[in-house]
Image 1: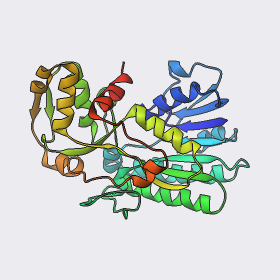
Image 2: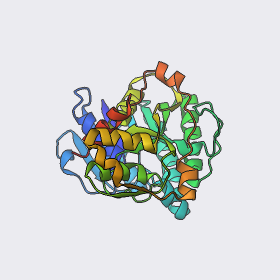
Image 3: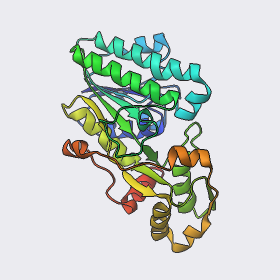
Length: 306
């Protein structure tokens, strides 16, 4: 296969690309990102394109190759897209629509895996799944939903095979994940694993959807391999902050739980700490899965950082 990965130097994109490099079925990878070529991409199977997909000349370079599979991960994160809406629109919406349009003009009818987001839902009180009507409350979520619709239309026209994968909070992002409102989820894991104190902006009872980067990559690759088209909500563990802290204490020592000081921020808790149950029976039937347990979540999430 010839594979395209946008956002290839990002947290998920780099993990996905490294996994694809190990896949004997993948012949060539075109990897695109604003960052310079990383060490892991120093292989003859990877053609690195440094630039943004909002640049027409970069997209033209990309489309010199025709692809069997496309993983479109490139985006401006939610908090940054909200504070810089013109940038968010240019990258998350306009460039994504342009990329799809150009892919539709190729002869291979590629399989496109689009990294969407739970931000499409907005506030929800009941079980949430791919059939839940989207009510995005932030610009990032609105743009993600618009691209889902555009991808579905290209599929309807027979120009590509496509699947929009709604990602929950993925952990554990390295360092301080600026631009991500859910960054505290990764910061909590890193701090307690390192034995450092952490001031948590949500309460012990705050409930989030958790998925490790390892399982997220497995799910993206699976999405590319199956024939199903449409929207899928990835399964994730629904855990409270206290449950995650308890699992970290079991993994690294009971004293680690004492390193957490809870100072709930009402805005952050309202946005990221009140997630309802997930309705993902259809996705499980398609072969998608979560990490299985809090202990395995932590193991998978922190393995990527080691």
